[in-house]
Amino acid sequence: MTSFGLVWVLLCISTFFLPKKYLAGLLIFSCVFQTAGVLQFGGKSLSPLFVTECFCVLRLTPIIFQKKKIRINTILKYLGVFVLIAVITTIFLPLIFENKVRVYSTDMGIDTNYFMGGVPLRLSFSSVIQIVFLSLHYLVLLLLFTARGKLGDKIFYTKSFIFSIVFVVFIGLWEFVSKFYNLIYFPKSFFITDIRSLDQQTALGGLMRLNATFLEPSFAGAFLAASFWAVYVSKFRFSKLLSVFILIALVFNLSGTGIVSFIFGAVIYILTNNMKKIFWIIPVVIVGYLGLVYSGYFDIIMLLITSKGDSHSGGVRLGAVLFSWELFVNTYMLGVGLGNHRGASFILNILTTTGLIGAILFGLFYLRLMKYLYKKNNDKASSLFIFYFALVLMFAQIIAIPDLSFSPFWMWIFYMFLTIQLTSKEEVSVLG
Image (cartoon, rainbow, N blue to C red; front, side):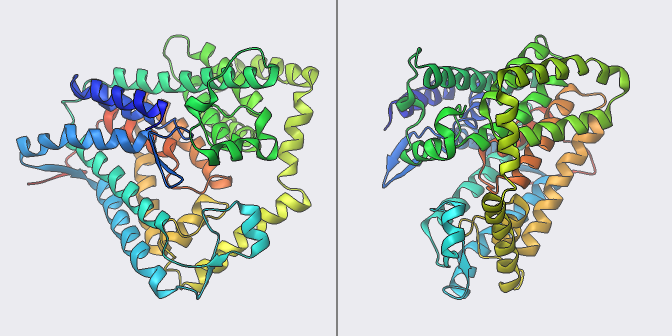
């Protein structure tokens, strides 16, 4: 067990015996730790999210026996069928297409996969891990939905979500100042327990960029961009001040993914708000722009963004997209199973791993969530808060983060099931 793991297990045990909302709040918080492992074995590590979900299952399962029923709605039905399809494709399709198609290995970077032309498809241990994680996510959502009413109020979970954002910004700035100026000690070995994480953070200039608690700068940038717009549109105290610190962290992150996602959020904000609200963001943009220009960071940011489309980087990404599409076609739109291929785009990754049927089911699940949030965001602050986070984060995943296992994606879904009222006669059925 790692030093971080010891602390985390103690937190899980402590909250296990407190009111249920504290363990549920810890579940949200666990989603921001991508580089820290609780247990390590065979070069792999158990994430804080996985461990916390296990504690949640143990804590919340007795509620099912007390109520003698499981509550499920249309959103969970779509996700449940998607999980079933994902499990079936992951188990059987590698056996059908073994050595007949080539895939991008999840154990290698996109550049290495591109120059090798991929590797032959085989059922891998990472596939088993992926279906276990996905099934566990679904089980936890079922338990959260069934236990509604016994998990506290949404104000507590909103504070938990915001605390998680503050924590990432604090750790990120601490880490950046420490390695850039070498003035303040940062306990890197405590927060980064995965050797693979250290390799990722030192590659492509990542050593001198803000990574916070994430595997690489683009992951941190996606989270920060989504967090900025979620916090900026919210109405809680000090939201605008926190937005400034998130923006500073995003600048030091120097991630093209983060910057482009931030711009996407700005476009959505402009399109969905009146000019009076937009007016107040103009001075912030001007001051920020001048600060970037005179500090020299503007040129660096533009270089990072444009480098995504240069002859080498752009060719690799385009090659990954074309490779994924060809793989999708060659498998007769059935896919190759979770954990067997990792391309460059979230949408294509869903298509190539779970097939056309799986992608449609996942799309229905996601669109149902967003439709509900969009309908409610005019009169519910928590819906508006999470709507922006979910939308900007998904945009970032589409352009650069193909992983369904990306923990911030599940972070906002957990939050939604804990805070948003999903009970209507049209949406809810009771199984018992």
